[in-house]
Image (cartoon, rainbow, N blue to C red):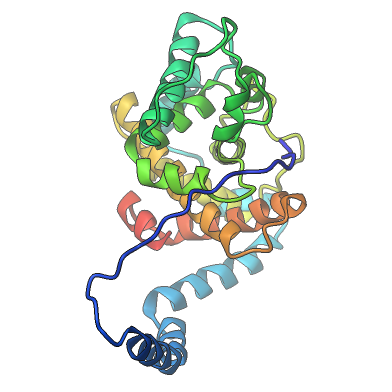
Length: 293
C-alpha cells in the first residue's frame, strides 16, 4: 500500500518549565554545555551496553544465516507447535477477512471515528450515510471513504487502529499530529507486515511485493508466535495488538528522525521492519520486546 502525500496541521503546544529561575538564560546555557559534555559519554555507554551488544550479535548471526539456501533455513527453523498453529488459524478465521460492510464492520469503523475525536477532545463531526467524510484524512486515510483502504490487510487493520486509539491514546495523538504522516495508512501497512510474518495473509490482498523468507524472517515468525500465544483468542489478539502498537511507535520515531520525505516512506518501513524482526529474535517475552522497542 503506497502512500500519497498530503498536508497536515500540527497543534502548537507550549511546555512550561517545572522550575522557574530569574536567570533562565544562564540556566539554558549551562544546560546546553552539560548536554554537550555528556552526549559523547552517553553514546559510548549505549554502544557498550549489554542489550546493544546482544542486538549486534543477533544481527551478525542473522546476516550470515540469511545467506544460506532455503533448505537449510527450513532445517534451522522447525515448524510451529500444534497448539500455536491452531490458535493462529482461529485468529485468521475470526479477524483476517476482507472488509464486507457488515454491522460489525460498520460498528468498528464508527468506534474508530468517535474514539479519535474523543481522544483529540473535539466534538464528533457527522458522517455521511455511506460513512464517508473529508475529515477521515485527518486520521491518515488517503480518501474520503476509508472502507477502500482496508482491502490491503482486511478487518484486522481496522481492529488494530481502534486498539491503538483506545489503549494508547497519547501515541495516537503524537502520531496524527506528526507532519506528513498518514497514521491510518501507516497502521494498515504495519498490520500487513505482521500478517505476512505470521503467514496469516491468505484471503487479503496483502503486500504484493514478496518478502524473502530468510532465516531472520523464519526465526522471527517462530518467536513472535510464541510471544503472542495464549489459550484465549482474545488474549492472543491483545498481545498481537501490543506488538502492533510497539511497531507503530518505533516507526513514528523513525519518521521523525528521517528526512520526512513521503516518497521514501516505503524504504523507511522496510528498514524499520528489518530491525523489528531482529528485536523479536532478541526477545524472550512480550514485555522484553516492548522494552527493547
